[in-house]
Length: 210
Ligand code: 3PG
Image (cartoon, rainbow, N blue to C red; front, side):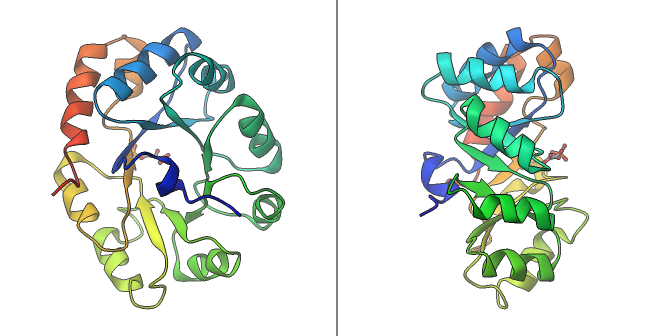
């Protein structure tokens, strides 16, 4: 039985999406986010440092729920689990990735952007999906439109989510969390601007709590 991502994320309504270019930044970044009220993070597999960063966070920041993002294929899926990630995320879902996912019960948010992808993933047993790129595929309007047809599916919209629109996403009944890079953009991570990131994280931690 696959645990729901929402059930392992300690109530997080905002999941920062991070791109880590230097392994040394992984632990301070994760600590900064957790201490600022955001217990879950999505580390994208977009850099050579990503897997080692996940291993470092898993070893040293035990209270951080580690998502692994940008998973495109079975090889990355396996590497993400081995590195110690607690759940995975993909931007979309290819047939081969879906078949690899069916062979594991690792918590996972498969990416969807169309009603047909949502139906396919629903048939495969997924109850929670990433909606990506959320602002391009219709944003809050898309969430409202699919709430009737796939009423048992809940989403984590990502892509174009910002402080200005996050609350509107989170007020939808079929939105359990949002993700985004605005909290810890790569330039701030590279510059080790932990104070700036902490301020944004503290503000983000207040979203969706009403
Ligand atoms: C993702 O991988 O989910 C996106 O890159 C995040 O999109 P954003 O940069 O618009 O927040």
